[in-house]
Picture 1 (cartoon, rainbow, N blue to C red):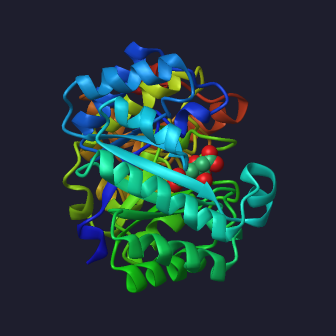
Picture 2 (cartoon, helix red, strand yellow):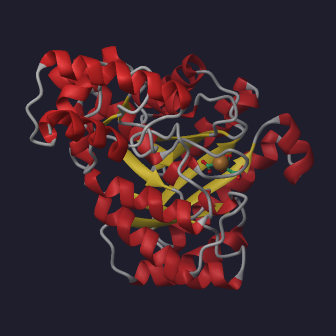
Length: 377
Ligand code: HCA
Ligand code: CU
């Protein structure tokens, strides 16, 4: 099964730094990296040392922390960038170059022939300097590149026999799952190399695309915490976990899932944003059940309306009862939790009272408890 042997490349410290409100200090990067390592991600990608002096120092600091995760940095396809990256002692280099018409014209101005020659030169240089380093080559904007161009570039790079992994990047979030599946399976079949998928979320397919990539035989998926990144970001770590867990819980058993809420909270705080209500697993309403029909069923068996078990993530479910959609089963459950013994007729009458009052304003738990206690006394 393809989902048995995938690795997460956690890019909060690279792609995530490209998010509008993200600027992490060295100490914050160490804290994020430490938590991601404890969670169990296999690789952590960091901003290029060429970005700024602090970026370079931060790679050294995180490499020096001695984490289990391998530390990668992300560089342009330049010998100078590669030299500076190698100098940091990083465990792996992720090299990228644009192959779509807009990027070839406005980003580097090179032809496909020139891209192939440059890639060969830089890759050979890296291997000469660091025979054991983990080396990946990726095309930027893969899904707006001509397929014949892509295959020329990827096959030429694969033929060098010097890289460990090829990367495909949906840089603008335009790809559909079936396109990702087709591209990844083709690369796996033609090169036999490990394949990494990096997908932006501009049109809402980042998780589905990552899943399609794995299904097609990709070995590595890029994520960031909460999905932060350029524009509206990439495949979120928690969203990928939710997607794989719901296919089969064993696919995410290798990760320390109870750390996810802490990781999401930390990054949200550092970026001065809230965790979105719609966030996977850790969104504030992810495990709140409201309508009477839902509450009744969930109280009888959570699996009726829960595909993820909150306890697996160190979280608890909540049955909301102070609103006009509440049902008497949920009110009875609250009465039991308070140790009261009210008969069904009384509980039903209280439920009607809650509904009437909630038409004016939602009730908090204290108000409901007050009604229940008053009826019991
Ligand atoms: C970017 C680059 C990148 C690189 C992805 C990769 C993208 O545009 O900032 O190297 O796999 O989305 O193409 O993040
Ligand atoms: Cu990106």
